[in-house]
Length: 345
Image (cartoon, rainbow, N blue to C red; front, side):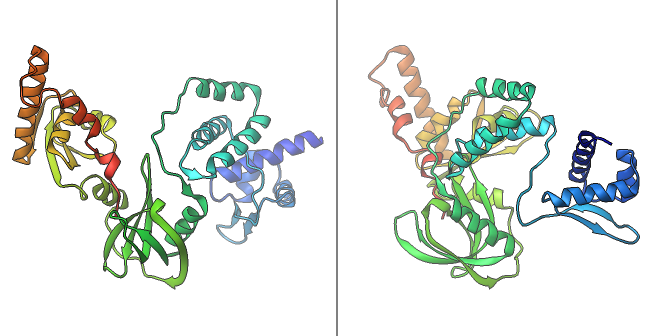
């Protein structure tokens, strides 16, 4: 058999091992159209170039691709190659310090070896896509990895933390999960000093140290829902509930999760839960959704809606004498919204 045919078969074997956790020698031989002995030789060829192929004997034994001490070359099919290239392009504009440069280097390597037809498809997606990213805050990659390992290994971490008011203190926590929004990274953790769950912004941490103290994982709330509540509802003076006559999916497209929570409320309706420091601000942004809505709570929001209606009516009629008629636009620009002041713990 030619070297080219052998190489092609070995690559096919690698693709099979990547497809599912375990194969028997007989199954692999049937897929490749060779003998069990040829399979064993091809497995040794993969091991020789760095792929940790594990073998188990006995009933139920077989071959599986394990984790090694270094990253060997990866084998992608067409769909995987396109998805990886597009994801690397998006990561190049991300919020993890240093990740953008690393993503560009990886993308350059992938582009170099990608077949022309796939390269053309990836570039078509890139040329047709603009990234409109908000003013996200970069996070140190080492801090992110330290927290990720601590979550995985269930070990306590200690760090200096600047709270919303600016005061800084040392915190010791049992980390559970990292949650990323469009603009920031958060950690949900059990605060050992306060004996309660807390949300921490990663950009406010410094001098982070992973301790050797292991902890037994506790029952905990859903991390994504907990962080959403912490950043979109808990910090604000006012919390509003508004029934919107539009599908929940449509409103979720308009309201980011760090700004408000959208609940299903029967066919064609949903309830928007949003916090804010100013009821007039909430009234403006609910009106901007462009759908009929009913204020459920607080009652004071109805009064704010009435003031907004009066102002808009005065503007439409050119009546500059109506109280506050010239202030709606400036209210919208100057009043801080949830995405601006949501600070976590």
